[in-house]
Image (cartoon, rainbow, N blue to C red; front, side, top):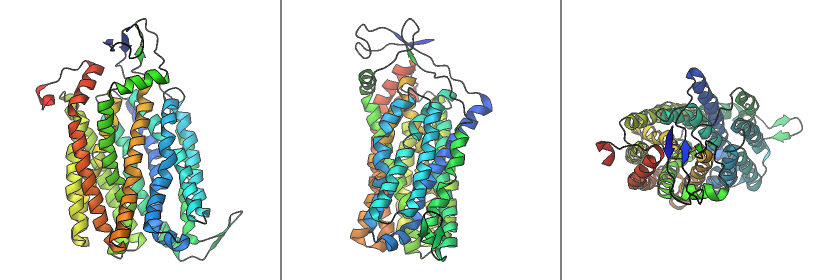
Length: 466
């Protein structure tokens, strides 16, 4: 068993040695079953948050809101409690049953998605979206911590990439299924729903995507809560219980890696959330496509290229880590953000379907690449007692800089430049955010190597020093 020397006064004033277990329990197919169940939850979460992007037209007409307010509904409304509650949920995930937290969250966010169907004003829809964020705040920290206990660190980036594919599966299915559902119900008269009364036909979409959450919540109970591995221990073998002050001290000691990874991924998330929120509107407004055609074509592209890019990023990260390159997750981030900025800017600028669609495919591929490996980056340099909390801190930063700013910035640029300039608004947002993200990832190489070495006493090879 390896020993991790901690600097004086980080956890205890007497500077004892702490032991950290590096054993991991990948239980063949069952570990991957857990990942797939969690991926289904993540997929559902993105369907519930993404479906609004196809309803921009009906919502604007029915509720009389501007593009800026639509951007707030897609970003800020969801992100407020999703962001703020993530931090206490992360601490709960480090101390309580992660499975039960996830199941309760799935039930709640599905209920709130269904309640979006009865919103009668901007503020009532805003409130329902807040509730969706409350439920989804349980998932990320708990899922990251669970997966880290089922997989050895040599395979963690790939496992988290498969889980994170739920982002693109959910976004793709939301567009494919949502577009079909919207087309089917748009021309229907107002529908009488028991108890709820009459509602506009497009509102049924929220009910239809919210109902499956009950079944998914039950599916979560088929996974087992694993033994927590990678725990800090005292010299006498007792597990160390960290109070909030000690947990904060441990995170402060790695602050440069936390800031670099979190802000780098936050800038990258601005790109993803901006695209998810406004790309459907681009095809509808600029190309004149119907919601059904937009959902089918764009949704299929996002699903296929997103999943492929996500898996490729995780596999590349694991390959570099086997070659003793400690900063492998950050290298994936630099390459992918540069590629995403270049290809997406070009795709949005040509504004001809025959050119936009082929160029958009590599753009979506690069947008997906760094997500899973970036999630793994912080899991690799923290003990089990802190994985949920540091995951929550990562998600907090992503939401503040990505989920809130991405959709809002595009909406604001639309109102300034004109509604049909949505492609250029997207190109500006993705281009600027990609440059920032690549710079942040690259500037974090050196501190991340040091924190990785502290955790695993890893001797870096020549390639890691570049």
